[in-house]
View 1 (cartoon, rainbow, N blue to C red):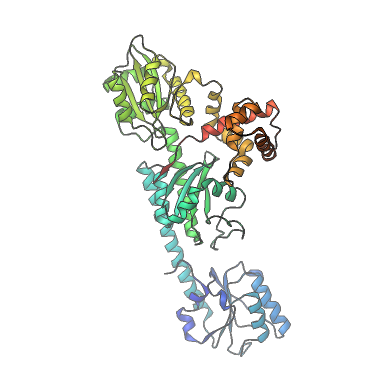
View 2: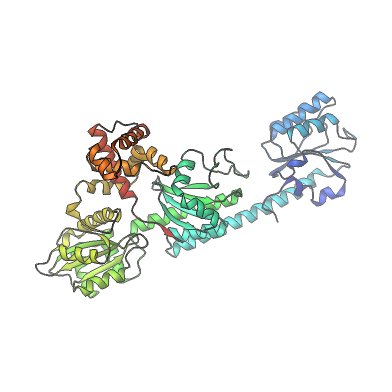
Length: 535
C-alpha cells in the first residue's frame, strides 16, 4: 500500500475498470494526492472544495457554452481540486468539450472522462476505504515511532541515542546543535553529510539564519523557497524546546530527496524526546546506577543535607567525617568526560576518601582532605593527568551544596579554555557571573547579539577576523601591541579593525565598546566548551 493515494492510483480502483477511462488534460499532475471525494452538479461547486478532492460530476453544472465551461474549469482549478472526473454518457455531454480540455491543460488540472455512468456512491466508498486504510497505517507507524522514542527514554538513553534512532528511522543523517550553533551529536553519517558537517558553521548560520526552515503543510509535500539551499545540501530543521525556550535544533540532512511529511513528523517526535532527555539530565544530575552516584545525586537534588551525605558516605566505605571537604568537577578533554572509576582511582591512590559520580556532562567528587592539607595538591593531581576541572573552596559538610555550585562554575571555565587546566573558584572573578548566565539562554543571546554578524562573516571566509578582535581586546585596545602579537604591519591591523567596525557596527576605539566585546568574547569561549559526541 502506498503512503498516499494519488490521482493515478485512484483511477486504477475497481469501480473505474467498469468503463473506459481517458485522461484529456493535466496528465503531468496525475501524481497529485487525493484527500477526499466530492460530487456535485452545480456551477459554484468550487465553494465547497477545500483542496485535493476528486470531483465527480455528470457535467450538469459546467454550462453549455465554451465561456461557461472555461470559467467552471478555472474555478475548480483555483480551488485546488486534485482531479475533475466527468461522465460522458449523454446526461450533459457525449464527448469532452474542447474548451474544457484547453482550459484544464492550461491550468494543469487533471481532466478525466468516463465513457459510461458509474455509481458515484460506490466510487466514494472505494476511495474512502483506501484513504482510511492509509490513515490507519500512518497512525500505526506514528504510534510505533512514538513508542520507540518512549522506550529509549525509559531505558535512560541520552540525546545521542535519540539522534541515532532518528537517523535509523528516516534513513538520513541527523545533527543536533544547541542555540549557539555548537554541534552536539551526529548520527547516520554519509559522505555527503560529512561535507556539510565539516563546514557546519557556514551551514547553520549562513543558511538557516537567513531562510525559513523546511516544513510540511498538512499532507502536502514539504517546500522551501527556491533560493534557500543554493550552496549546501538541503536540510530540514526542528527546534528543541526546553522549558519554553529554544535550546537548539535537530537537523535532518536529506540531501536532494525531499522528505515525506511522515518523516518530518518523526523529526518532531525526536525533538520532543531530546527535550525530555535533556530535561531529565538537568533535573536528576546523571544517569546513575552505582550507589555513590545515587548518593551524590540526592545531594545535588537537595534531598539530603551535607551532614546526612557525610553520614551515608560512611556506609559506602568513604569516611568523610571530621575532615575539611572540597568538591571537584572534572572534564577529561574534547572527547568524553572523565570516567568516574578513573577519577576515583586517582583520589584513592592519593589516599583521600571521596564519593565520586558521573553526572553526565561532568564528573563530580566530594573529597575529604587530610589534616593541614589545602587544594593545591588536588589541583596538581588533576592537572598532572591532563584533566580539565574546577575546585571549590574548602567547606564544612553543611556547605556542600554551595561547594557543588562553586566547583561546577570553575569547571565550566576550565572546559572552555584552549588548553587543559584546573581552575579554583576563587580565581574566576567576573567569570562567575558569565557562568551563571550560561546555564540559561541569556548568555547565548548576548553573544549572538554582540558577535553574531562577525561569527556569520567568519563562517563564510578563509581568513576569519575573530582572532584579530580577540588579540586587540587582550591588548587593551593598544594597536601597536596587537600588531606585534599578530606579527602583522600596523596598516594591515588598521584595515582589519576598520572591517571589524563595519561588521559589528561599533567604534572599536571607544573603551565602552571594547568592554562589551570583551565580555561577549568571554561568553563565546564559555559556550564553546567541548561537548560534541558523534554516534
